[in-house]
Image (cartoon, rainbow, N blue to C red; front, side, top):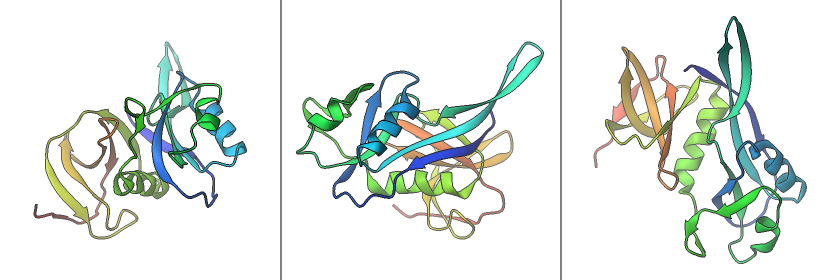
Amino acid sequence: MAAACSGVAMASGTMEGKWFAVQVRSRAEKWVAAVLRYKGYEEFSPTCQVKRCYGRVSRQLELPLFPGYIFCKLNSQVSSPILGTPGVIRVVGSGKTWIAVDEAELFAVMTAVKSGSPLHSLSGLRIGTKVRIQDGPLRNIEGVLHMIKKERYLVIALSLLNRSVFVTLDSHSATAIQC
């Protein structure tokens, strides 16, 4: 399924805090992100344009890159404004303790979205060689190199959600990272 990144809603606030994954009701990602932005929170809710065929008719749909989740910069001591937002189910964590998203992983996803390269979403991918891109719009981004049908992809994992995004690599040079 080919997808092209389109809408990225990201407020430019300067709130202190860490990035957290917020689980939201199904198909409410865009609406909840707008409400949180209105409340003054910095949020990130990437979407992609996906072509879907319905019989003889094909349509371009804007779908969330991570269905059921948005990312929000929060102070973990203040929970009531977030949890009281209609459509919010919970902040991802362990019990009542929130777990912050790894900033490097989220930055890699943000950079991939801003690059304009076609994006795809995967769940639970953990194979391949870890690489760093040396040039182009994805410069200095780390991920896993993967091949699908003779095409190269850079897989960027969000380990907290056990989800991955893969970006098509054109002529970007990648070098292996020594562990």
